[in-house]
Length: 89
Image (cartoon, rainbow, N blue to C red; front, top):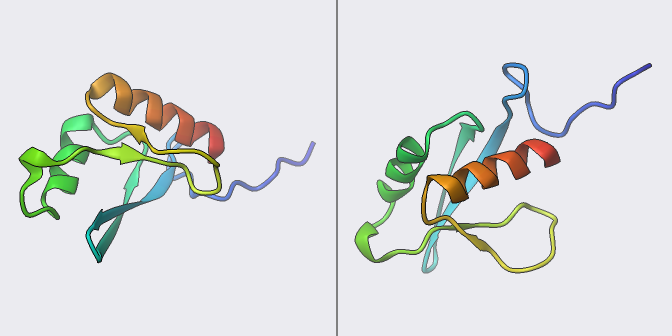
C-alpha cells in the first residue's frame, strides 16, 4: 500500500518538525523545533523571546483545530502536546 505523505517533515522515525509562534502584543516571532525537544529546552527557547517570562502563561493550539488554547504549565502538559502534534503531523 502507498502511504499518504505527511504535512510535516519527519527527520527521524516518529519525530516531526513544527513551527512555534511566540506572540507578545503586536510582535510575533517564530522558530522551528522537533517533537523530541525537552520541556526545559522548549520553555527556555520561548522565554528567550519574552521581556518578562516570569509573568507569562504558555499555551498551544494546533493549526486548523477549533477551540481555545491549551495551557503548557509543566512537563506532563508538554508531553501531551507533543503526542498530539505527532498524531496530527
